[in-house]
Image (cartoon, rainbow, N blue to C red):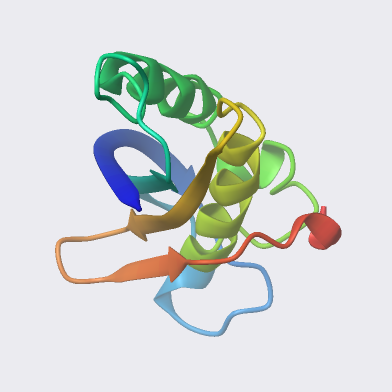
Length: 127
């Protein structure tokens, strides 16, 4: 088994619906996203996947979120834009763009230097 990791970031605002506390108010984060993918076979060059291709797949998904008000950006116009829901959404969105034989192992979404949510299993049923 081989595993690759790429990191990227985006900036966005959100507010948590139904939450009582500071985060119910409009605020923003410089989110950091760590993507880990895994697979069992290397190509003829000895690579699981080109890092540039993997960064591009993640980057396209983050571009949809960058400098947006997440509460108005699908699917977060319907579900709360929590770090957990961001991780779950990215898990499914990135997984759909990977080459055959490679799967998402985890997505970690950091909303600050000390707070992160990790999704190990995708659950597209919520969307």
